[in-house]
Amino acid sequence: MFELVLRAPAGVVEQVSDLLMDDLDALSVSVEDADADSPAERALFGEPGMPAPAAGWERSTLKALFETEVVAERAATLVLAHHGDDGVHVQALQPLAEQDWVRLTQSQFAPVEITKSFWVVPSWHEVPAGATHVMRLDPGLAFGTGTHPTTRMCLRWLATNPAASELARVLDYGCGSGILAIGAALMGAQTIDAVDIDAAAVAATRDNAARNGVTLAPGPPDRAQGAYSLVLANILATPLKLLAPLLAGHVAPGGRLVMAGILERQAEELTAAYAPWLDVRVADREDGWILMTAQRPLGV
Image (cartoon, rainbow, N blue to C red; front, side, top):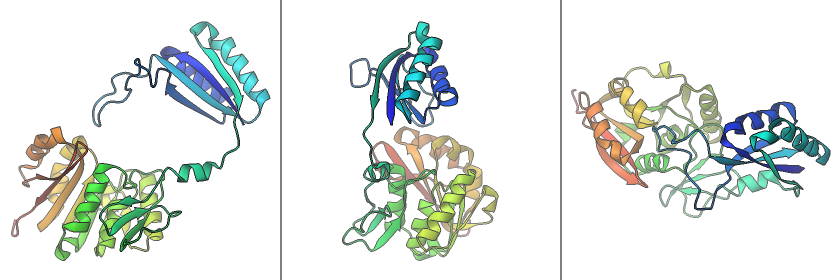
């Protein structure tokens, strides 16, 4: 395996990346800030729900992997022929030592503690001592492995708050990997609908539920029908506001709504959005994110 390292200005990064992947047989191409770890480093992405401050870095480092040195050298020559006058430079062309990429990837994911007794554990890890509720979940295509504060807060709420009556019928809206739906099942929920607009998320939820030996009903959003004793929605503030009438309408009398994906500064917006239907309040905080909950009064 050989790695070709290029330096390129912002205006041609996408063109060079496309050339490497589409025409020059690169196995992969990564793009990094050429000024990373220096005073000139700057963030590319904004906060969730906010536009990015810029489309790209002023200078980028592109790293392309090739099967052989001959192919890598040919790629370097052709990239310079096409974009040398645009400011593209070759920084290195070097062999890469063989690595166990599966083991390397797995080493980056450790068990996630939700409570002292509730853990999310990748399949290749041993179960921690003292864990009585264990969810087996491996990183995949769909969002949700328990490492993000929003997911941890939802799972922590499931592990410590709901009464048995609130787990009678559960809806996980925007299920991602199915982690919240599976968490509800592990806490005793029997009837669970898990819905998402992404077919890959629905498939991941189905697979993860089978891996954990729990029964769910995954599907597209129109699977959600009627009233639920618990509605879970870990999305982002903007879709949560737009979905306020729908999500509030799914909460049964005496039932609860639990929402995450919300920044602390967005609390008032969510409270106002749900005010016509439910009294939404902050129930937990972690790393600038909040968990908001509401309960529909009985008879309403």
